Length: 209
Image (cartoon, rainbow, N blue to C red; front, side):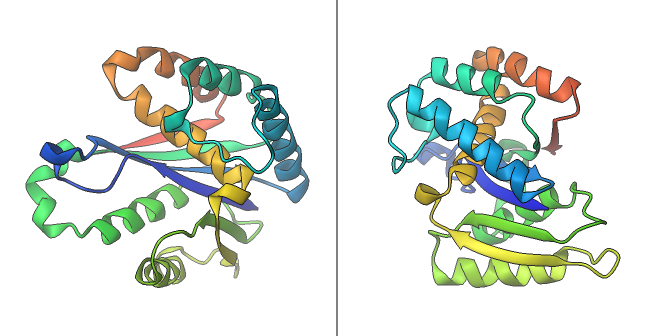
């Protein structure tokens, strides 16, 4: 089973200095390498229609709403599902002194991965690796300790990748960004776009708190 992870927003609590109210971790899950490759090719094909080169990085925050809508519509039905954790940091603000940003980030990853049923296969996880050495070390420790063993199988592979060269990490960025937008009343149309996924069991969102 193959999992690609990205986030939207930031884990900070300095709202007066631009920290986002909502923080999202999203992962795209594929049962097979073939399903991952099929989806990657379709995603890249759609991006080419918008004149993205194969080496250009898709970023939700730098892309127009019309492109979001086209991607979310045309990618529906491909062989993957999305799990997301949506955190309202404003509600957690009273606890901010107890929450280190790295721990907050890693615990959100652990929460989203706990929703994956991987009893029949180990997880091969790819995550953006442009963080510092301390972050990568902390992530490795978290993955080894937090993820429970099922049927004798744990995480089979953990890769820190450059999102610029990973279309499927960029795909996770698309869904993370859409989930975060859907939590904001002024972007009600994103909730409507995602409802199709949710109604078919292709997307689940855990809200905290």
